[in-house]
Length: 84
Image 1 (tube, helix red, strand yellow):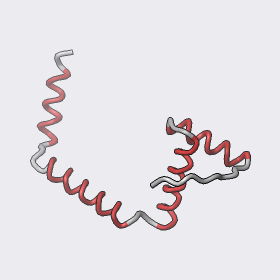
Image 2: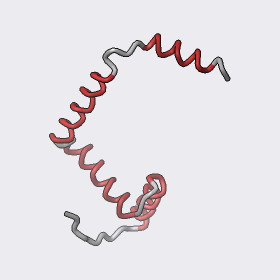
Image 3: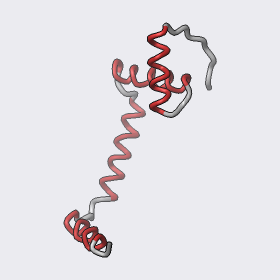
Image 4: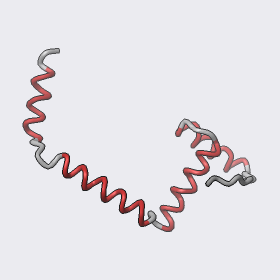
């Protein structure tokens, strides 16, 4: 559930928010939200559920690439490139 709040930003903070919004391609509000979450994660650490989600994702990637032969993949890509 989103709650509305008002922030008073000095010129330095407003400029930083504008720069982040431009870089992220989003609104000032969204850039501020993202910055808050990233700062919280840096200071407090990533929440337990987020860590579990990352572990599940990495486990799934390992399963998907378990039978992958990198040398064969490189050979296949080189063979495809020869046609150009």
